Length: 127
View 1: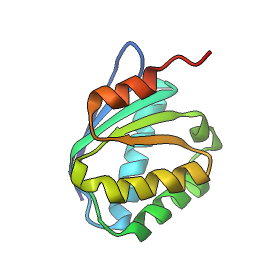
View 2: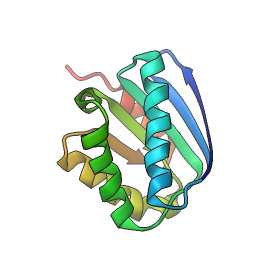
View 3: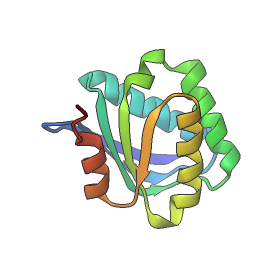
């Protein structure tokens, strides 16, 4: 795994930028753990992951394993988190599958191919 994460608090959310290569399921799980550590540092309920600089595994099975990892290994409070993920258009099939599995398990995680769309969804005020 060759990955780096940088994070900063913005006015409305935590921005995490991911760059590098995730090759196998174990890399995805480590990436999730690294992200979770960043999230708990700031204790914010909204996260924008900018991952257009990340190469992801293309096996859909890896993403079922990833969501199961969230359920089994991370605190249940993760479901209260609202997260927008910006990916490359070429990753839409894989990311759409991940998004569906997340929704089925009660997570508020959405995938986008542009930063403005992700930011708009993340910061929308619901009455």
